[in-house]
Length: 219
Image (tube, rainbow, N blue to C red; front, top):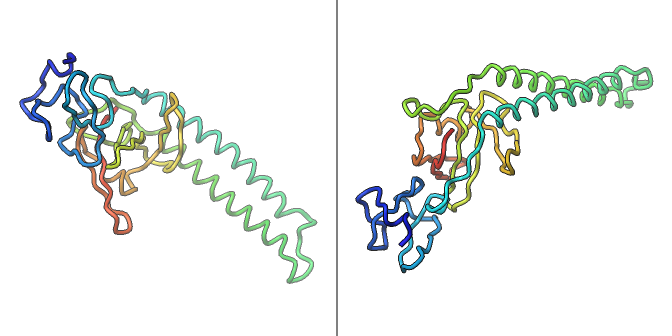
């Protein structure tokens, strides 16, 4: 057997086998929906959270993710400011002044300018809130809180990286080839994650549909 099986971490038997649980930090007693790994030289299999117990889970640099989020917000703010200025100039241009009640070009330009200006303010506020957040290492005594980088696994075995921030919900970041989604405590999943620990189960209900996740890693 591999050294993974020779070193037994807990006196617990793996469901469906006659071997004890291997030393795998990602093992979960919840086996439904999890893939099973064939162990070399045996007929036994073990369920894992997401990763082969013989391999270390992929690491993610939380500081790099945080800086990337700020950079993305700054870029988005600059682009939107330019768009808002263009929309404002179009709305106030002499050629767009309505000549009769059926001429709506100026009105449409005004609506666009208003929407762009509102979006600029939203991004500016999100950037301000994220710049003010405190980024600290994971504290087991507190559990998951704002500033945590979390790896979750769904019941079907698919994994995802999430960054819990005070604002900028839905922002997509790519770090080390991995997609990280920014969520906030105002979302159902963000609220459910607060205070959780690695290997905890998380359940949320969206539109009457229950969804379950396992916390695999927290930074």
